[in-house]
Amino acid sequence: MNMRSHEPSLTHRQKVKEESRRAILEAAEAVFSEKGFHDASLTLIARQAGFAVGTLYLYFEDKADLYG
Image (cartoon, rainbow, N blue to C red; front, side, top):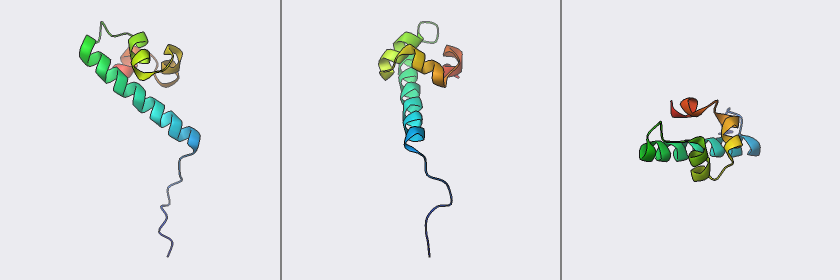
């Protein structure tokens, strides 16, 4: 009997996107915890995550979207 899941596997590209989003969220949590919402910036979050600021906009609309 085939025990494979009926869910489709993620493609490499989907995995990379998921990992990038997770890294951004982890960086945002660290920056928001340290700086608070108002003093946190997308630049600081991007730097912490190791991405360019523009990359954050591929995943989140703005700082408020990332925060909540």
